[in-house]
Length: 460
Image (cartoon, rainbow, N blue to C red; front, side, top):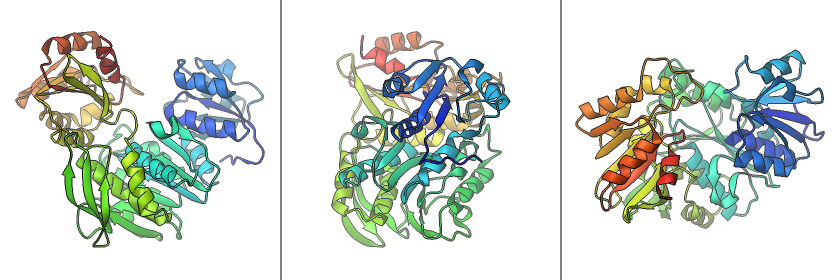
């Protein structure tokens, strides 16, 4: 594998530079003096910002973008070997690294690097840690998979030894990381276009955990089913968090305000420490926050800075984000949930909110996930009063013909919920404006572009 000498900046080309993670890494290298070029299929606010910072961005991916002066190419899992740029880089014998390999090498430059993994909750937990570190004024470098207000985007380049990032399991990419502190929030069946099933996923998280050095720390959900598999044979220290009182970090006396924001008593090793109030909603985020507290405490951050950081953290964009109000009294929220477990957690938390009837517009994400978890999606969504299913967002996949959005709508309807499929966002918006009633709550949900429905509705 090519090893970057960060003391001698080179010319690096990013294939898919407009992605939320790729753009952040490009920005880190730009600020370190590297010459950055890149390509993406369409222009965006992100590509425009990188251009303003000095990156040369090509819209469209063509072989001609791979010039002879490029020293290294970075690519993501979405780039396949038939891609023109990929083929051109191979033909020119230019060294290539995956996004994860680059992130792993960047991480190695920091003494206190933290990698937050888990099937669910990575972005929110990384955001929590970011707010805590900023409150403590430790000047961290941050790479997060969503936009957060405190740093005005998804990346912050600090000057200290502190670095915090997400660690995604897809294609085993987080195996390239070498964090000082690793976090595993949960292990669930997902990315089944790559993994054969939950056992292989659990083994992948175990491999990630083994990357933590002996003097490092694993912070892990002590209640999860695959805890023993993930932690077996580790040489690093292990701290647990979760609902069970046997965990090192747990919570008691959990209660919610009218918007679903929790307050709880923090329990550390069986002793009550302080009261924590969150500005993100839901019981699931209580346990996300426990992992962030464990990491921050390990890094020597004061409990007051932890409390204030968590209080100020409103999460990242598209994590139960308030978009506005339509029809005078219908609140419009948007949520990134795209897995049955995430959907169930969000909808369980919604029960603590005040509303008349609950509407959910769900956009399934990838054919593989929808097909494999069809019954689970239906079970998770049936708790709504009304569900509208939009077309499946293909992302990196092609339509296999095995499953459709209409199939999911029919599954939910068979469980007794008012559920149906509509073929276009325009149709969905028209239907909602006609049928939502006073004090209803509308959630647009999914990892694709379903959030544009809410954005359009509040403009009408």
